[in-house]
Amino acid sequence: MDSLAEFTLTILETSDIHGYMLPIEYANNEPTEQGFVKIATLIAQQRERNPNLLLIDNGDLIQGTPLAYHHARLNADAANPMIRCLNELQYDAAVVGNHEFNYGLPLLKKAVRESAFPWLAANVVDAGSDKPYFGTPYLLKQYENGPRVAVLGLITHYVPHWEKPEHIAGLRFLDTVETARQWVSFLRQEAGADVIVVSYHGGFERDPDTGETTEPLTGENLGYALCTEVEAIDVLLTGHQHRTIHSRQINGVTVLQPGSQGAFVGKVELQLHRGQDGKWSITAAESELLSAKGVAPMMSVAKLLKEHEELTQEWLDQPLGKVAGEMRIADSMAVRLKDHPLIEFINRVQMEVSGAAISMTALFDNVSPGFPPDITMRDIVSNYVYPNTLQVIRISGRDIKAALERSASYFATYTGGPVQVNPAFSQLKPQHYNYDMWEGIEYKLNISRPAGHRVEDLKFQGEPLNLDREYEVAMNNYRAAGGGGYTMFQGKPVVRDIPTDMTELLANYIMEKGTIEASLNSNWEVVWDGKSQTRSGQTGELQT
Image (cartoon, rainbow, N blue to C red):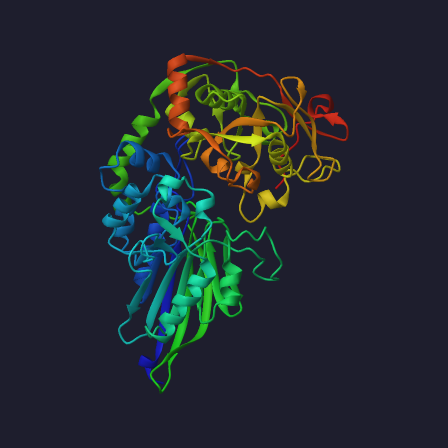
């Protein structure tokens, strides 16, 4: 057999790193089993073993940790630490993720300029010229004595539903599937690609095995459609949902998704054969996830982060103020079942800063620790983990009730035992941040009733809420744009826009007050079987 007629291609994917470069939890600096410096070791090992390597980052790289925030907001003139690490590992390309836009186009374009690799986003175009905004939408790599491999980059076209308009001004987001269809055809027919890899910062709207719909078909995730409606894709790299998917094929397309925060590297290995006509074809495809657990960090990469990390840690330890009372969180489910001092505090800051009489916020994840007696910047960013800003929009009472019903659907219908989370909010991608808690109104959510019919005793200033009246409500910019399935907010008038990050608003408020009170007016609660959490004595457990 002619050895030159056989070829092995190894494709490595990282995705949704979200600034988790070091294996630590910033809330307490405890070590973790994830982070880029650990998966860097895995990548280096694979490069030694597999000379024909293709290394792709699938997006959501430069936002998500205090390290990323500190660089973006306080040290942006310095070289981007995340980009330096990817350059060190010799990435072939990166795909633009939705969170890449969170700090605005200037910071993103700076990151692109500093990269030793191209950023791909075929369906993000200049609104004036319709040309791909980030330059070439694909990578074409010819391997010595091997195939020509194309990588097409795509991003979920749902970005305008979440992102602040000024962060994507002058851009158009084209339909993902239609854009893929056009470019894949070009790459196969005109560019002569033997292998086509689509790296899509988006996930799956259907179960990869059964094809059954797993989420509302909004267009946010179209991985299944790409596999079944676009011809000639060989490998689909995905992300965005933070899922772990491997050893799967959809319609003959090998699919992969490597989780988030540097916990895994995704690996696809393709065996190819060159026929007598000189064309390469895939004879076998395997995929797996390489875990960072137990892997030693790559110290050469960690050294690139040292200066940035020291500045970040110094900033995180700045004292801000004190708490009179208790604002720590012992049970995340208990916080979502009945008003909690931390949630009330955030809402009251939003109301005071914005002047709105009504406010909403969320407990973003299940590891938020709350505030200790002495508050530092570390405590702020450990609880408010997104670079949101604050907006006030004008909505009707009917919109408020619809939003409360959307939040109430976070809970599975109560039939006894511990309160459970609706799988739609806990599986695929955890969406605890899409359950909101309100201040300025009074209400109960009866989770013994079917979803859509759970809001009870809805009042404003002691009187039943007027569904036809308009109210001004403070919320973060993501929610104000309708993010998280809150379509009732889309297109509503923005009365006030406060462009300062919520972390900064909270920090400034605490520093100004010196000491904040852990107050609680218990204006809302979740109830079931006619009994409230308080009367039943049951706090519930998080069941996902």
